[in-house]
Length: 315
Image 1 (spheres, rainbow, N blue to C red):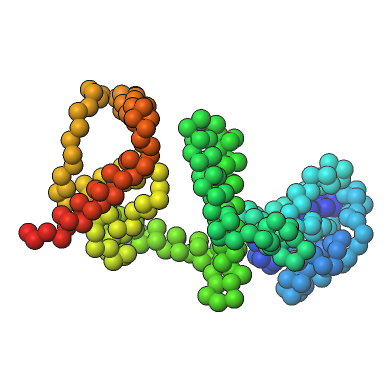
Image 2 (cartoon, rainbow, N blue to C red):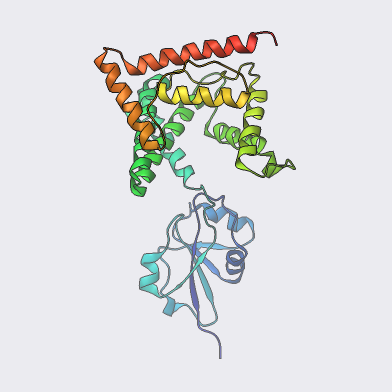
């Protein structure tokens, strides 16, 4: 007695190159009669190049009409999961190719290409690195707010908005008439940097603790950038409080002895104590008519000058 006929829907990802199919998919294609609804399906040329005949028909047959012992393979449109057909035909599903992790990033690159191409969005077409700068800052703060709120849905959305800014800036650079670079260059650069900065993972360097990793990271970074001062590379335009914290961190890591003017402080034991003290100081500054942000920024610049002086002093 012959086995019943089989109708198999073959699903493929539009983010995987045509022809890069699973072994199970190729076994089916070579064993069955291959049908497709559109001759422009990207897999058609690759399948035919492998010696498999592909026939274009308006629709897949009902599973009951597949002759006994025969296998009919229907090439689903790229990205189609076949849910609608499965319910109506009682058929099998096989994944011919699946997205690798990060595959959806290609969709974002494609959307940005559409927005910036002729016939796309007029607003997007007018943007520059400088005009987008305010949005980059705004999305960064919104992402931080989502983290503080502990809302996963908001965080996922805000990370998407932040990622858009990266892709947008990379697209602008790609369109330059001279020395262009693209999102691939951005990704390649950070991937290479991560490998380079993690020799304890990708090479044979021993760094058993997080502290060891941090110390080595700073040393590698300083050597790569050719920095002569512990404070070189610290962006002075960042908010004053984070600037002060970053400067102190860098200088402590470098071991440079820099005197800091000591001020009387209330007892500090917890993060709440620190926060309350900073808030009270900001309020007192306002009472004195002093902008606390600018005052701290000025202090940070004095600290930078003191660091440079300490580094250049003999002995």
